[in-house]
Structures are given as C-alpha cells and as structure tokens.
Image 1 (cartoon, rainbow over the protein chains, first blue to last red):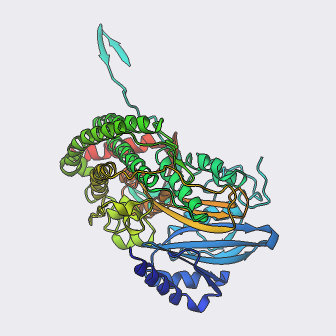
Image 2: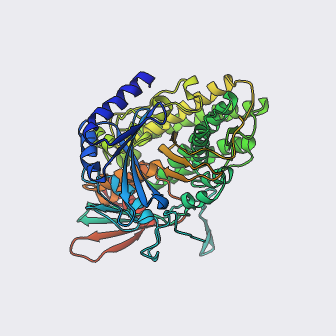
Length: 150
Length: 398
C-alpha cells in the first residue's frame, strides 16, 4: 500500500470523525490518534462502520492512576493505516457504551477490558470472565497499575 | 495396544503421532433439534498473565516472555514485539537480520499450516492424513532445529535483530526440505480438492460471506477464503517483505473447502518465498544498536501470523521496562466469527467450523456444553463432539 493511499485513508477517517474530535495526533506516518468523549465512541464507531472504514482490531485499556483516569483505545485498521479512537474514562467508575450492536465480534474484546480493568461497557451482551478463573475475586482488576499480583 | 482372543492377537497401532495436542476452551452451544441457535466461548485455561508480567520486566526479559504466548507461532510474537520496541527508538534491524526474520517466519508458517492440516483431518475422521502431514511436518521442524537450535520457541529475535546467522549448509538443508515438502503438498492439494468423503465435510459448510468477514475483523487465511483481500505482508510490509513477491492467496467460496484450499496454496507460496529469501540473502550485520531505556512513546506493530493479524501495542515511559504491552492475537477475532457463524448450522458441523479458523489456544481438553430446548444441558468433551460429527456424516452416507 502506498504512502499516498495511507494518507487518503487517514484523511477520510479524520473527516468522518470531525464532529466528535477533541484532539488529534499523528505519532507515526501510518497512524492517526483521535481523542473524543466517552459518550461519543458509539456514534463515531457507527460512522466508521457505515462508511466501511476498515475493521476493529483491538480495544486496549490503559491505566493512569496518577492522573486519576483510564483510557480506552479502539484501534481500527484499513490496509496499512491504523486509526486510534481514544476516550478518557473516569477512574472511579470507568464507563463507555458497548459497540457490540455494531460489531458483534467486539464482545470478546470488551470482555477482556471488563475483567482486566473493571471498565463497564454499557449494554455489552456478555460480562462473564473470558480469561480469568471462575474463583477470581470480584474487585481485583489485574491490569490496573495499583494491582499487585505477587 | 494388544488384545488376545482365542489364541488370536489383534495389534491396534496408536501413533506414531497422537493428538495429545488438545487445547482447552469451553464453548456453550444452544441447540434446537440439531440446529445451533446460540454460541458463546469461555477461554482462559492457558492464560498466564503475560501482559501484566512484562510491565515489571526489562524490554529483553519481556521478549522471552512474549515469545511464549504461543508455542505454534512464537516467532511472530517475538518479531512483532521486537519490531515494536525498535520502532519506539527509531531503530531498524539490519537487512540481513530482516531477511532471517522472514525466513524463520515462513518456516513457521509451514509447520503451523501442516499441523493444522493434520488436526483438521483428525477432526474429520481422517487419521491417515493426520499421520502423513505430521510426519512430513517433522522435515520442517528438523530444519528449524538445525537453524535455530530448537523445534519450538526458536528465539530467533533479539531487540535490534536476530541471534544467529544462516550458513551455506543451512541453505542446502532448508532447500532440500522445501523440495520434499512441495512434492508432498501436491498430494494434500489433491485430497483437499478431490476426495469425495473429505468434501462432504467441507464443501458448502460454514460459509462466511465476504461482508460479514470484513466487519467482524476476520483476518488471515480465514478472511482470504471469503475473498477478503487482507494480508499484512502485502498491505503493510514489515521486516523487508516488500523485497519479495508475496501473492495474495484468495478464494471466493467462503466455505470450509475454501479455507483448506487457501492454506494449502499458502504452503506453496511459503516454499516460493523461502527460495527467494535464500537466493537473495543480503550481507551484513545481524543486529543494530539499541537503547536500554526508552523515552515515553507509543507504537503499533502488525504481523501476518499463520492465523491472521497479530497486533501489538507497546507503550514506553522513559524507564527500562515497558509501560504497557497489549497483544491481540488473530484467533480472538476469528473465534468471534466462529461463534457468529455456528448459529444456523448443524451441531455435527461445529467441530469442522471451529477447526476451519485454525484456532490457537494452548494445550489439553475442550469442553462443550450443549443446551437443547426443553432439556437440561449436556456436557460433551471435544472428542465426543468430534465423533458425533463423524458418525452423523457416516449415517448420512448410508
């Protein structure tokens, strides 16, 4: 895929998401990060799905206890272009709406973030453990920075 | 195993290979009669908390842990991570190292596809084909061991390059292995395309339409078998793949037969790429200088693993330990597609549909809980469900 092609794809994504974008960054030539409010994740995703822009690759949780926030990054790929939709979440009650009604396969990605970070995905169809054992304590979220597992 | 009956002896051979490589997962299927109406999965039986663990290791220690996420495709994990960490500090592995990474990756693809072909044959009741493919697979395992020192977990990568060089002796033995395997693969191609009983289990079964595959985020041979043009070696070449000609292997049928055909054709493509790599090995260093501490940054690396797209997100924080490594394996999205696909199919088709996406978990037993409307749920072991499928189709033939 040519550099021109990647640039076109990323520009297309940028314009599709303009109304919800609070901040953008181009960390690498083939990547575009767009920050938006958690409440806008679903309409933004719907716009991308409607325009058939790429596919959802991953949902990554990040924890920043010092800044009292978490972040959910939705990475989407189209050819060589990678888009990161990033939403800051309130660390005391991290919540964002589920995208499973748009992309059914997202359920496995959301389940992982639920159990590892304690994020709530509103209306996600399945919140049962994906990787953690059945007898894992309810309030221990392994990937939070302040969770010590030794 | 030997049985004695009235002075006669029956010798029943088990092995030389045995599918001891069963893998743990729990699937819950809801059925109405024979038709699947709902499917969900519960994984985690081999979860080892590697993402958490690497946050308290240095970048090199993390490499050793991450390459052990998977035994079948350990090299692509190590490569994805190494490339990610190199990107964080604007370093590129030297050309010879990149070529060696590609060589090992294609050899790994061969062993992985042959392993899968055998497992898939076993699921369909074709144990002879399983024995043959796993015997032939030993050829590439031997070549990998001669080159890297290990049959599994090759540890070819260091951050900045590779650990060992390719000698002229290696070149000769790898080419000989590839020649042998190419001849054998002609035979497998014939079975996959023409064997009537095999086709009964694969043709027209588990069809995934192209649009569905696109939106569900399916990648790898599973996607290409539904006509989706996704192959990172071509779309977003890494490690010097753009120096070689890689053909996008596509099929538009989207059924199980197509998934078999695509993987067998990819074997031929792997043999071709290996020959091209060995014919054009650039001279030079095997490693580039790297830093121990990495400034705050984030990167993404994407690799075409045997099963599809392997995605790594790596974040550094100025220390000598990674801040976050997110690993998204191809199977997680391909698995989700299986769950979606199983609905509407016969229970007897589930083993083959699952195996068609070449799922990778890690080791042991699978349990399936089947809920029939109006009944309590039944527990099947994987083997029971597999035999259920075989017997169902044997009755159909009669």
